[in-house]
Amino acid sequence: FDIVQDFYRFKRTLLKLPKLYDYDRYAPISAKERPVSFAEAKTIILDAFTRFSPRFAKLAQAFFDNHWIDAPQLPGKRGGAFCMFTTPDLHPYVFVNYSGNVKQVLTLAHELGHGVHASLARKQNLLHFDMPLTLAETASVFAEMVTFDAMKATITDPKEKLTLLMQKIEEVFATVFRQTTMYRFEQDLHA
Image 1 (cartoon, rainbow, N blue to C red):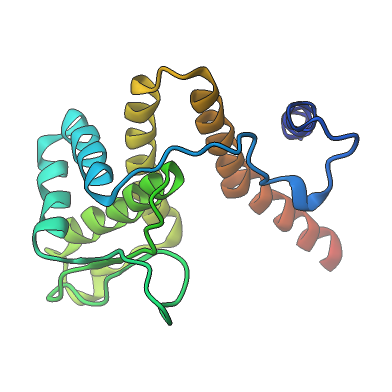
Image 2: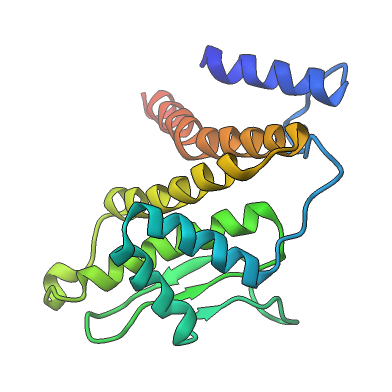
């Protein structure tokens, strides 16, 4: 818990705020954000996946080639991002609202991690096809981190690199720390 508190004290200093309120936690530290086209995101992700495993990249490439990704932001389209897989005989689909920034590249990589995992699981029968959330998130967070590491290695602008690192730390806190905090709260409440 001290690490999280230290991080937010550091962020408060970067934002030059006298006090960091809850709604400031996800405030960007830089007003300038580099746009990333969907085509560029595809290249970044597939290159990162290829460095990890050509087979992994080939499975992800199929999502792009076969239009198994619904990416454009459209009027009336619901928000969020997810990978839908229902049965082993149907190929998984990725749903995102790609807005063209670095965070969205990582979101797309995350959802493709789910997609590759579900693609590999298709050899299972219906009763064994589904997976618990902990396993599903391991595959997706791994794909996201492979992409994050590749992106971090190519960024030369110190402010852009700091922004990327800060966003990733905040996502780790949201994935791990927040869940632990809510669990502890529920434990205390029930006790």
